Length: 308
Image (cartoon, rainbow, N blue to C red; front, side, top):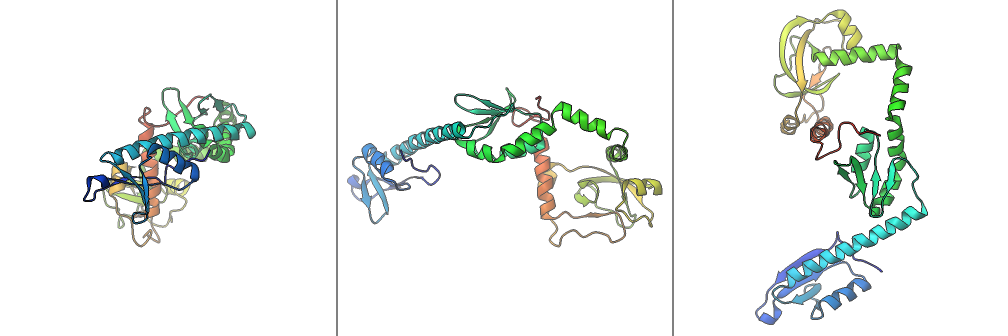
């Protein structure tokens, strides 16, 4: 049985004319024969109006009755879409330890992964169940889930505790691990090399070469050691004297209020890079800051860590 589209339906518009017999609502919806039959059965007094290019439903409560009919049609369309989704699953099922099949829905439970979260947020009607720590997907979204499942499963496997321990063991003692630890330790210090003659504004988000968009909080005049500059800030020219600037991450509200650069990144040719951020850089930073705020509210969003 064909069902009308819920997205293209419009609520009834009240249409009053001189006579009480002509008080009613104009009803529009995508045409198909079965939908029209159900509509005529629900509204036997409705007539097609060439002037309105719509069905005219008479009565003072016509708009409200038509809106209720639309809601019932939408619910029926969702039920039909779920039936099609179940058929799609039966024809081409996903077999995975990360997918739980229920009578009325599908559930995805994986180790925490940024990739999984991003992919699941692109699946229509997917929702996060904070109590059970799973993603809920109605069957009507199965085809969308199927299309991105390979990426979801690969990311979940990479983030299994055993796989993470294996990668850590492979990196242990390597030059890559030592460099990574040094960069992480330097980031925790929240300092950044700056030219004394090219200091950024305080209290305002700016773009940096190493740490993205940050807010500088002060400059204490401490000189940067050349060894630290070479080891940790390879992209900064080493021929000038630098001082340390202190910074903190920019908040989501600060990023929202920051105007983007209209001319792209304007940076020094010889000094440590900082600039007014571009629109694209602000978009990336705002998305990350918003995700961080969501992770701090486990009841509203996926948690920071999810068990396998």
